[in-house]
Length: 520
Image (tube, rainbow, N blue to C red; front, side, top):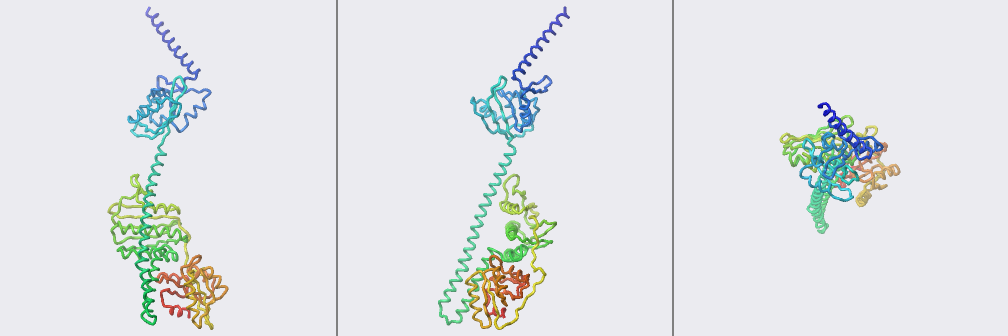
């Protein structure tokens, strides 16, 4: 009797399993089942005519799931399980709300319950197993299916959010830079306006007042000449501040030395400039940019480091050039190469330097700690070395043969200055002005045509300046005496032009008798 009862129970269990199998088979045939989970938690997805579609769903970079209206997940792909940071088999059958923060559950329920045919989208944060919140975009739409009512697509927003933060930092830095540039421009305008009004204009007014006095006064001529010399010096100072001549004539190192000598020493800072096989750069635009970077770093030392000594090192190693600015001052918490500290926007000054260097394929590095000083290194591609000698290495000074009259070619881009020189020279019995030119290229052409004995030439001119013209004439081995004239009267300028091959240098603020002596 007991054996019969056991067989009866076994038969009933088999009928139940058979009914379940028939139900599953019917569901599979009708297409209402996408996958099923076994008792040992294994997940099986069905391969049928929509096999290609399933491969697509499983391999795309977005997470996908089908849900019931109460949020129960009937299916999810492996990408969504990875976003949830859980095995896929534990996700299926779970509530989607379990994977979102408690403060966002109500908002998620709201978009899932909206009964319309439009796709709903909103940004949320997925709560991963380690407590990390992953930013995502959730898109949801209704389905026409027997076992699921909603389709959810989830996109990882980690990278777009990073880019958004980077863009925000960049925008803040650009705003700081724009504010800085506006402030600096205003300060420079005021500086030059003060120089023109308080210095140059007052000198010229005084000069006019002296000229209104009786012309037979010997002292009047002396005073006027003295005032004009002061006016020329004031305009030379203004021009040098706007465009340092030595930077364009001798290169970056000479330009920086000039800047230190003229502007830094008087502020109590001594800078030791060292050269380690540094190759000068031909491109003047790059030189100007590097000069401005060094100038800004030096002023940073003056304003913030609180030291009396610093070191500046120019070097070129294996085709890569660098400029190091070192001090042992107060130091600071260094920003990274993006100008940030702990993810925040950094110094607009360093950001500005970084952007300039980036434009020429360079970069910068800052090493600094509070109380231990600062080391800033600017690195950029090496350039072709600039040579100051003619092709044969000579700087010969050619002296013209004396004739009945000395033939002169006057070269200056300012018409009134050029004509003034011509008038003065033409008044001399032993001098003949045979031609005029407005720039260096014209001077070279007219030298070959007119064969002058002496060229009186301005240093700063467009197209080709006096320095480069002198080099070109010496390279062509043309025998002519060259006298360079300029408002710049410093020793460095004189040394530069004489090194290029000029026979003499004349300051425009000097007495004209000195020019006549040099010509003769």
